[in-house]
Image (cartoon, rainbow, N blue to C red; front, side):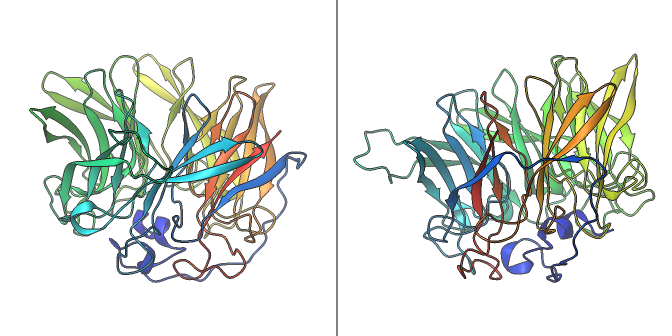
Length: 444
């Protein structure tokens, strides 16, 4: 199985991920065999924005929504400033106006000291500002940044927001780690928590280290990093790519994409518990890339009962990845396989974080798969102790897009919003010519 960096960067190759050099793998055009489940396409799919390059290109992550129903996201490339190829990336906002949507570019990254290539979602902090990460920065290892609206009234809709770099990671630094990935999280005191895909000092991850979980604390305007756990590539896992989430007791949970060079190396679900001035790591589950699935690239979500839900990109009885649940019981957690997707084992199934609606339905995406093998959107509905799979949309790599990597947003009316990292939009080339990507909506 490919490593985590190769998985996320396989489609676009080295010119669309400045921090990792890989070989571009050819796109497979194999159609998947039919799902042994219900498939419905009664929903309406609409592209609400098609990126062209200057306004952004290749959105790698999902969206967030504010109380007014506006959408916020990032593009890994595009914008007004060049970073070797394809632009340095942007942060954008989509506002619903009349029957359409209007995109406002909140910030275009400049590269070098300013940072470039945001690879994860933007999130709201406790102060209402936007926070995020870039995969590259002045020291090469990425940044954590904050975005705020202009201090004075802006005479147009195109005024950039004010960006502050809170912390810069050193490339190849085994102590602080590098390449921040996944959603940021906050505690009640405003401290920031995140994951670095590399670093940590372990020898079991081919040199760069197995990754770590970090905390950033602020004092006098300066942010200081504290490493909560450095992965070893053993049973605790390696390459934490999806960020962490809190439970009500202050424990952190996340996934590690693999377990380094050790076997089985198909990833873990972990828990970090505060213990005095340190944190204790517990592996809740270790995947085998077989019936249970393998390589959990997306993050976790909680339901109201405290159960955890997540996905794996491969494995399962159908070979196309799995959706799983972990249920707490006394001092242990019980693994429950909810669904195995059908697919080509060499392609990627569900990679992003799931979202749950108020009725308990789960929604997710597959990077490949669907009728055309350019990705799909699916729904899982609980029914009589099992789950019913519904294929909501299959991407065709035309103006609709392709490769929906990350998670979704579902509003109170049941509308679903997401991104597709590429789109063959009439020859508009970004990156390796696969198009600049889309933001889309599915209405029930």
